Image 1 (cartoon, rainbow, N blue to C red):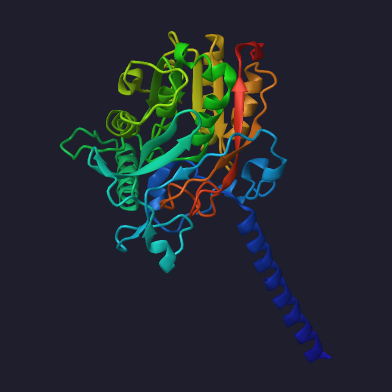
Image 2 (image 1 turned 180 degrees about the vertical axis):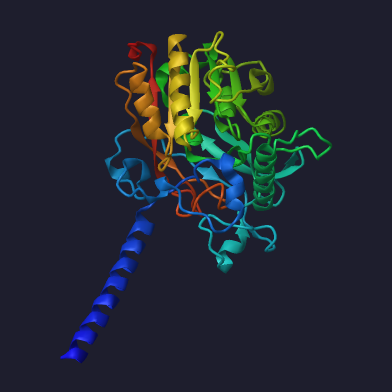
Length: 400
């Protein structure tokens, strides 16, 4: 009897261990973390022993769906594509991490063009070609795997200097990342979706040559460049990282300037002269008001990667609405800032603000683990259909 009791206890322990293991697997596969919260604490990520941020453990929130039902999405836009010129095998040093962070031989391929590398502010970038309605091909730059590693290291240095109270201008080398944010060095899905939306809305595209556009958090510049190529009268691209603005400027001046513009609103003004760049911190609501003079439409794509940026974006949206601007926001799955954005909009008096799911696409190419979290739906080996949410606000929705 005693032996039987002992065996039963052992079996119970084994069953408990197996149950915990299976539950862990389910949680891991259901999670859809996009970014590690508070990149400004990036020095904590230098160690491999970091804890999973709370939002990565959310399994029921609609903002963390790993497998959205694309068949139920009604707002489907014309099918276009994101493409890369070629694929070639490179050395282990060139591919530090890949889209799914595995170390298999298949992941030793960098999706790059053999003749399409550019150096901007000492950082090596590769060309990424995007097809969009009306205008055709738009090329932007994103950091190679090695460059992403370098930028992450700079982010860690920035955080350490901020903690130590050091002055950056003390003889050290000039940094490419000034605010500790590397996200703008790679492409994100909502940038294509926002561009696609603007270029397929009749009330926007038919009047684009009379509209002035402001983009918040421009990153690689796909939205700003696309809208300018579509015939916008004026485009102001803003970001709080100088490197992101340099990418937009470089791509407009050196890569896309000779593209055949298929705009239905052709302009004799050169592309580069219609795009302005300006440093702007989205979250600095007090000292940095939006440059809204003569602006008609404000655009933002994939900037709500933290709750605080979602809240700040809500304040910026209301700031624009009060200046009689239309506001269009794109957001990929898994962004933890979306709930804060919607809640703050409601608190500020915006009524009827509801995201509509659209069919967008994933991005391709290597991503550093600290730029794009494991299991992210934003990146895949080849572009795939992806549910991207869009919100279109007009001034009459502001009741407060």
